[in-house]
Amino acid sequence: MSALEPVVDLVFPPRCPLCGAALASQGGLCAECWHTLVIPGEPSCARCQRPLVDRAEGQDHEPEDHKAEDLQGMGSALVCAPCLAHPPRHDGISAATLYNDASRRLVLAFKHGRRVALAGLLSRLIVPRIPVLEGEWLVVPVPLHRWRLWTRGYNQSALLAARIGKALGQPVLVDGLVRVKRTPSLGGLGRKARAAALSGAIRAKPAWAARLNGARILLVDDVLTSGATTDACVRALRKAGAARVRIACFARVLDESLDDAAKGGSDLGA
Image (cartoon, rainbow, N blue to C red):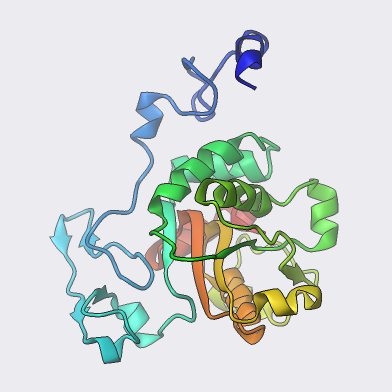
């Protein structure tokens, strides 16, 4: 591909996908737009990566410090109040960015604008956020129903999973999960409505039962909104016998931003 890059750049001059500014090479953002992305920082919750610092006020929240037995092996890591109140089924979240206008526009272009080349940029931002994975992990994308896959032409999560698997040197099981029930677009729906729509919608593919049993899974999605979709995937993988399930995504919507994000209509649907 490197030999063709000058020709590609001549026919399609490199442009920032957010503002259209000229770039030196394909597949990135301009300096000004890079600064509009919000990267999760530290300290953060060990279970869900929620920042434990109030960005607006610059003040630390008051996370709890619990012992290993309380956190099932998480050690004395900081855990946020929501995870203490409702311990997640997954083994952690790795998000490249926190949801804001810039990440929303990138996801819209990638998911609904058919800008599939953005898979390279988004996956390159996700990979550094993933901790070192010891041993073999299966990279499994959040599935689309066959009708949505047919109308859209591609599963954006599968495109990300393929690139992430290659970067990590881990196998990709692109059809490890199947969406057996056609669900409405989740954009604009609240947490409870999303969970109800996804009830029984996602299952592990029977053909991969032996592969999933006892496996460590890296579940890949583009946006983690209320967590209803990933929760349904995690339940299906746990039912299939998965030993561990960690989530990797490009944009993470925090609970306090969920209502605002849902106002985007179909923006954050599957």
